[in-house]
Image (cartoon, rainbow, N blue to C red):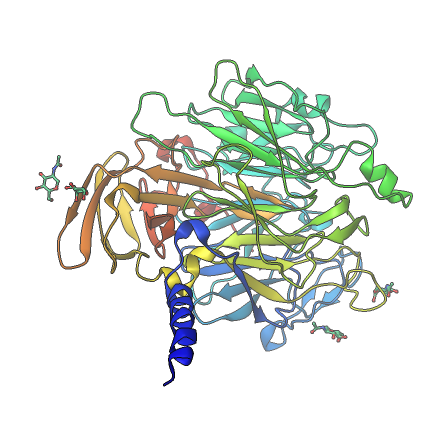
Length: 568
Ligand SMILES: *[C@@H]1O[C@H](CO)[C@@H](O)[C@H](O)[C@H]1NC(C)=O
Ligand SMILES: *[C@@H]1O[C@H](CO)[C@@H](O)[C@H](O)[C@H]1NC(C)=O
Ligand SMILES: *[C@@H]1O[C@H](CO)[C@@H](O)[C@H](O)[C@H]1NC(C)=O
Ligand SMILES: *[C@@H]1O[C@H](CO)[C@@H](O)[C@H](O)[C@H]1NC(C)=O
């Protein structure tokens, strides 16, 4: 080897070593997209992950035929349907994450622009819709062969574009919907079966021309009241007393954030849960300026909102803090990641929600890091190649990927001659924390086992393995309530951060961390959660845990339980 050659090789070797060194979380790449299915046969308008690691996906029934047949020659004969009265195609599926397969489900009424929540026993209870489905209640219990069961008039009022939230007693509240300035509960007691309760806030926030208050953003605050955001402002609401507790200021600028000026919103991760006063913050991003909907209808497409507004909803004098995204976004989904970051994905930079009203898809997700200093919270992520416009959705999976489906800005299943063809492809976005370079720092949970029951306030020991040396200052345990995602809003999405109280090394590369489970059903409504160990911002795969009592709902409160209802 000549000296001159070796001189060339040494820098090359150093260069290679640098390349092979695992990236540190701070300098991580920007995520990867993977196509999972060329076609799932239906549009992913609504998605919900259940505790058997299957994602229930729903589409409206009145588009016409989907691209997926119902098995065994089954058909829906429904004289009330708008387009086809006899339909042998599926409009709902169950996607099995572990094996990347799906089976069709038989939904009997129109779920178009409906809503839902998972009840404490893990059953998806899905409400409302359009036409024959507008007062329907549907239940899907997770099991290999289970299918939808429905009651036609389970709701007291028709609910189309309503928002649901699970309550501490296990019931769900169903708020608003088109021309419904009220709310109701499900399941019901015999005495309240016909009741709706008025909510004048929904009248006050209803724009004459475009509403802009549909699918309101609803979060259960840590004091037990509901934070309800519609149009450009919010209230804190006591649903038991039917009274407004706090009126929050309008978002600076005054532009609407709710359907059809569809922005998105999350309750930021709840921390310091053992303190007497837990703080809660809400982040609302994107949307479309006032007038954008009527402008789009007449062919004038306006740029989407570039701003996010963040507010401490537990503050005695709450005020919005404005931030600027890397670009404008409308119809985006905000997904809480296990490490507390927020992924803003899907949507467009021009136009509004609604048929044919969006333009310029935004293919790059934005990652928002809530704990960074203001001004350095956004990171641009790698783009997908698939536009995800109106009727698209995104949900987090147990392994940390984000499942993305849907997009259909037309009245029918149009695959040709349209600007944004109906989209049946299923994709996953892998955030940078899934890069193989992090396998040494990524925790693996070894105990407890999946489906463990957790009592409120109990000390929970979580065993995990980390191959590289542990940075014991940056371990946390998080619990995520998997949401019902539709129309850019994820109902019931909630991430709880459990600070380690005691961390000990129990083996060569195994550790045990002690945390206190959330102290009440106000902090964590009963039901199934995904529990993660996070080390240096890299999350483990989640395990399923079940919070609270095993009974469906708060016992005596309910004379009628959904098990007792006569489902078709
Ligand atoms: C769906 O079905 C239609 C009609 O049969 C067909 O033209 C189209 O290619 C199919 N699309 C997909 C993505 O399978
Ligand atoms: C969309 O599909 C419907 C139903 O098949 C059809 O009537 C309509 O012409 C299609 N629209 C376009 C733009 O191709
Ligand atoms: C921390 O855990 C270790 C090992 O399980 C135990 O010996 C110790 O008592 C615990 N300390 C506290 C403060 O809980
Ligand atoms: C955490 O790390 C520090 C510094 O290495 C060490 O002194 C401390 O004992 C560790 N604590 C636990 C619980 O492992």
